Length: 111
Length: 113
Image 1 (tube, chains in turn yellow, blue):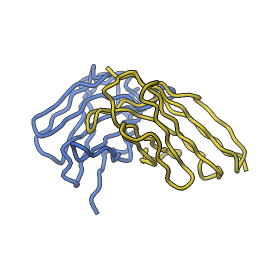
Image 2 (spheres, one colour):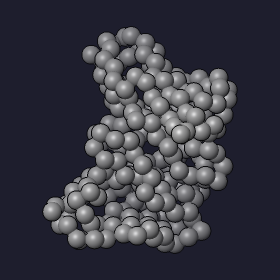
Image 3 (cartoon, chains in turn orange, blue):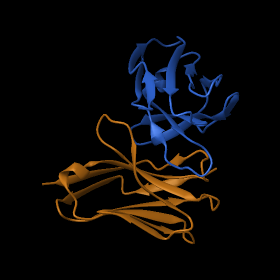
């Protein structure tokens, strides 16, 4: 089955700096790669996703890049703000099939 | 508004008791999933369903069962609760083919004493 590894497990940045979280996956058949944000005590919510036919996608301060050959994808957050502090999860799946999640990255943005 | 709801939100039970966590969605989604979340392990898939009468085991299915008698509900049953099943449980759903986003319920925190 699919295996997703996520790094780092914790990340601390100063407000205004950039943050990068990386994930690798094992199943070459996976073609959908979402990122979820989970605030303390809340449910995970989708913030951005990318499909295998696209190399990069941006939405304001967040972007995701995908390297299919190397089987890795990354989340980039620019101009970080304290409200970006949360746990971020990457995932991989085949279309609408079951999603396999990484273990999460706890991002702390210091004012 | 359409939504996905879980109940109970918090439950404390004793080892050996049967527990059922309810999940109800009003989006008419075909695909429904149950995950457990433990510190350091992210979200691990317990069981999932792609439609009525369809159920499948995930990576951590031992000790759990589900049933899908209609589109809206996927109850998760712990046949004989164990302390190792103390966790936060999330139900999620998505429409189906060619749609990716998972919509999560608010979670159910289960403590097994």
